[in-house]
Length: 504
Image (cartoon, rainbow, N blue to C red; front, side):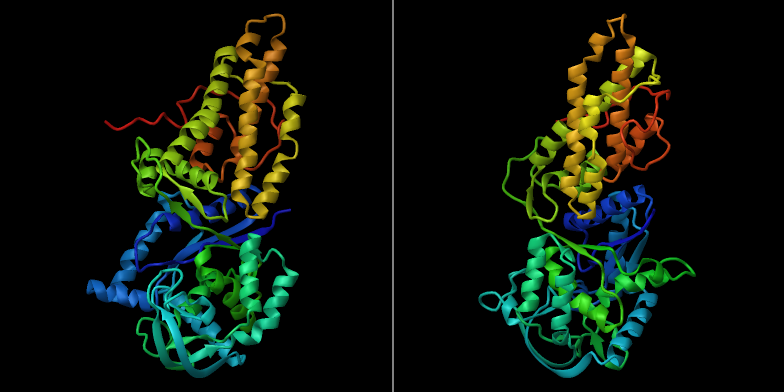
């Protein structure tokens, strides 16, 4: 039975241009969305841009342009990134959209009417880069920001406050009742420790801010950007489809995807805000680490800077997508390098998978005139290795363990390569006394290649789609080994991942 699946990226802050980190979060959500579509689920995938707040105001002033000019220019670059990285988002929200702004005002008025805000004086440390008021526990040595390593500003002003402290018990209960509300576990533990350390009310507005939404009950104060931004996950559903409100169909969100630097806002403030507004909190969120570029050996073709746009231009979006989730265990911090990319590309994409596809299709063309043998059984030896693989894949992706899911697939890719060597079709082709055995081997190789390629659709979408077309596969849903008979016509292919040529 199909289910619904609603996944989001964080909305990206447009005070600067998109970079690899933005692509990473988006690709993770895209892998999840594509996989759930394969399962026949009703999927909605949201991404977009966060366009208010002091950092935007400051960045625009530095350039001598208006905030509107800055956000329009940079939001366009983020939106243009989506097709470049082959993301299949269903909607791209901008928080400067009047429809979002109107819905934010409506929801925040409800929070006010429900009695969850108060007026008071704020006095404490503020990071202009994070757009975050820091608690004592979050201030690094020398009154600096632990994330941006810059001096914090001491702020004294009269604000409206969201009474987060009153949600202490309800948030503790949420984490107790839903152990997988935040994954991985060590990120969940961070959120729980923050909550158990004692929650303080958080500033909801700023009187000095110009580029922000006015509070509906006090237009002289502008809304603190995080409240505006977090609500995008709900507001988008009200206008993403012309003339249709998708809230009832898709809320609560099934999985928010984000980097670790915004854990507090999403794992603590966001569920409390939902409760205050009478909304069901999201079901789960996955927090990933940072991609780190260390001083590593450079690649012969890319130098020592892993520029995502250069990689995509030269090797395709699939190669970048595969490398990021293969090299770094999703959820952890991890080092990436141009040399690491090149090694994965050559050994796993070109040799393991690309060479497997080329050999299998070439042998069917050579020994059976391009027609996959019919009336063949699944080889019991191969069937044992494929047994339960689809269930393992689904389970890992349900737990947002994307790198481990990719390893399940790659184990099968390596197994098929060993099967080629074990059965040696080129030797069987010389044995005219037993043509049935060669038929069985070729059928099993084509069928195995089809099954793993369907599994790879979320990870290598363009490559998988091309190869499945060559295999005569009309659907893109997941399949068990042996679920398709032979008889289809296939042909030899050009290398899926051509050899890296070193620039002159």
